[in-house]
Length: 323
Length: 299
Image (tube, rainbow over all chains, first blue to last red; front, side, top):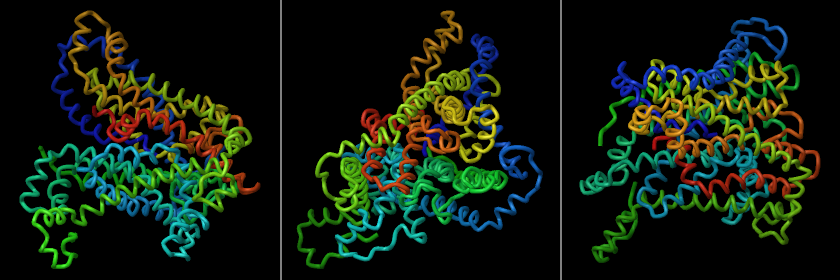
């Protein structure tokens, strides 16, 4: 889920790089002319592949979303009809709500726990080992993690036998339709926490220790130290992490797809998010594939990412503190 | 948050001063996160160990005695997964596909990233940002037209077709990762090479590329892991059994348990086959992987 991660520190270096390019690029540079000729040959293959297999398909999806199309043959222009279909489809509405739940509830819980872990790890021995352990669910196949998570919550699974051990003999029916999505959300928090803890740890490491000592001398309690020292100084990293979470949480697919308590088909529509909805409408519907609504749903995802990233950047834009 | 000292009885004031100060320092707001950390670590290690142990148990043991050690090591779980579950074929496909993807991605992304970050050509910056845009586009957005495109070229159910897609969709992150990496390298070397009469290509090939080795290796591993686990494109584009990749073999094994008797032992063995190679790389190169995933080429 995380191959899109490396932007955290990169964004900053890209920004500073921009200004240095403008100031140092000079016509007198002896390396300039031959380099300009080579530029095209170096960049073109990547650019071509990227445009053909990434940008054009994105535009095509937007195009398809205004048409009726079973995946082959002629397209029929239908205007906003597909978006109307989505609006009146209770499955899409619940998928959309689930996507929002993942972004805000899972995201909120993940960030809260990650902050708590980061604060604890700041002064803990063996923090690198801890980091390695809590990070590993991120590099393993989400399908494996999902099956494993589902198995833990089976009627005779480990969670219930643990609960029985502490005297709770009538645990909730975890894998019932009404609870299933909550179990999925807890699993997503489990997987994501290690990743965001690692990012926040890197940010917190850059804060000089004497700031904390000074705050402590001034009588600040841990919560105050967090609020007045930690948060302002790592604001930039928090903002980056929030953007990352938005981008990657909307893509979440395998964990839900494989999480059906042993069923091989699609899971119950109650746990779908928009990613599953798009996939199911186009590739797993029993009748003719409905590419139109699938494309419309995909475009809704894209707009959601764009709007949220824009909002986060707006809300978190402030002067970077120098320290 | 309240500290422990507020909950303790008043008699505590008779404690020696240093001890009391020490106790006050261990406030709840400090203790809760520490407990949380170790609970997390214990849970992760437990789950992983439990998965590996369960893969050596019979299905009956797994279901009835989830906490016990295997009575005897059921190596046939692995045999069933490897042969009947098709994990052997899938592992080979996945290995070839992910290594070829990571290799080709670097061959295409490294020159582009180098030119974009070092050539001071007008347009380099917007093009870099244009590549980065792709990081925010979910696979579900592009998979529909890609499926239509691939089927028009007869590349559905083809590993080489999937390979092309994997390489193309790797580029946004790869280019962005490597531009950041090249940008931090010193300019003096390039200037010296130019003064010595080396062509820009030679400078790239024999000076800058070897110097960027560490970033390239990190990217190779990140890409390898990502495609070892890739599911969506494979699910949509691959159909026949001899071409399936590990995540598909696993999903199919899960599906077949609906019709045949549940074979949890075999399933867990299959899950181990999927994750153990990645865990081995992780044990070997853990910090590199973590820092690569979370910090990109900032170093």
